[in-house]
Image 1 (cartoon, rainbow, N blue to C red):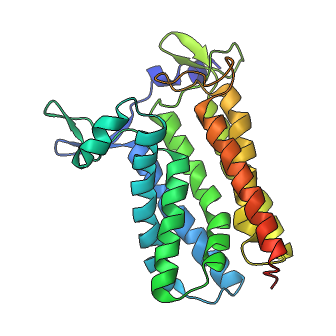
Image 2 (image 1 turned 60 degrees about the horizontal axis):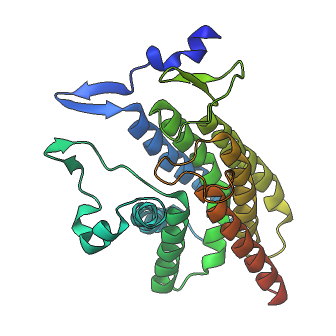
Length: 272
């Protein structure tokens, strides 16, 4: 286990270089996350005979990718960044990859902000094309968790969102301290496990919109649990009583919204 424990000492986050431009494993994983989610969506849409084709899905994914990127960045600035006021008054700086003339990339993305951006992107696409948003949302509920696995692996390879200090045999040495590989826990809990449950349950779906509501509940619960192994954001620390994190607070809100959505859809009898 020693090699695994000290993997960061033997791992280069740069996969390869194109001239002077470095391509990081982190970026590769996020491209894989997007492509795998799109592949699964197309496969499920064809397998389960969804009422649209690949062209519509390609157009839809462009809309939600824009929404996700904008929502994730803005969400981080609002929920996590200590310089919220600065960015809101200087919005052109939100996607500035340079700091003091040095290229540092765009850092700071929020999953919960990405969800809001994704919902807005879906609403915009379906309004323009007069499509049923619930069918698209249900398809995303199946495909996104699969892509999410690669996203969290990317976090692990980039040595970010590190876990809490621990003495477990499979812990990872981060700056001289053994820690939980919490990014991989999240890949399994929030990605693989949620994907398997929704993939199986989709055959028993009772109404349009049910899968996205279930996804919201499952993700919120999985994230809440995973946060117990993840180091709180250093700029925020614990939100309440030395145990509640910002991620858990946002996930609690997501759980309540998803539950409300589920019962709203049942009440309004949006049955297939």
